[in-house]
Image (cartoon, rainbow, N blue to C red; front, top):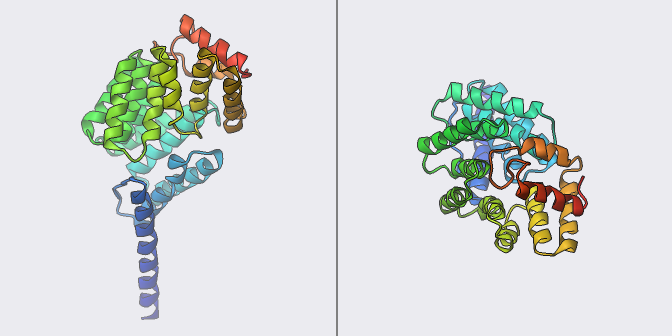
Length: 290
């Protein structure tokens, strides 16, 4: 009987912890379905969202361990693979890790799809990965499929917005970002980031600066966008301040890696033989980035 009561106490404590995590995310407007029979795995998945919500190198490292633990507890947990894939993709984009992080992002997202072919977020991650691998048709197809699978998934529209910008369609980038914002009004900063880059492509620099000033301040590419907008507006001193923020957030930031990462068909950070993109690099150099 003592063992039974001890087990009951452990279950109650576990439930309280999980419900507390759910409520904490709900307060931020984030709903994460359980999608696993393992309450403990779900608990670790919820804990892992720290690095998704507030991406810093430290939070990222903690979240990676949380998602990996969720997978260890339930090796068929598709959502855990999908979000781990997003973490690895972020590490690649923000120059916290090398190209192998992109390989792992694709591997984890594909694993999620193999376990759950209706996982909208996994297809969104695959679309992003394909974009950074310069497989543009595949990228658009995955992004559109993510939206089709779950038309209420703001994350899928966020991915499709970025993908549209990469495909040289800034108007679509704005439209999808605004759709995501309507679905998720609690996190407007995520979508203003996309709008900011779309306005860069349209050479609407004042509006771009306004959008970036409402975008996530812990994303180094928010400050990259501000550098370009400020330089074009003649605000060189402000641009140099933003360059310092880029290096604070991503100490290994390199224009060479930017060129390799964001080589696209067009859009806000498109092909580097385009005069607009070459001008972007010139502005970033003038602001102090190398």
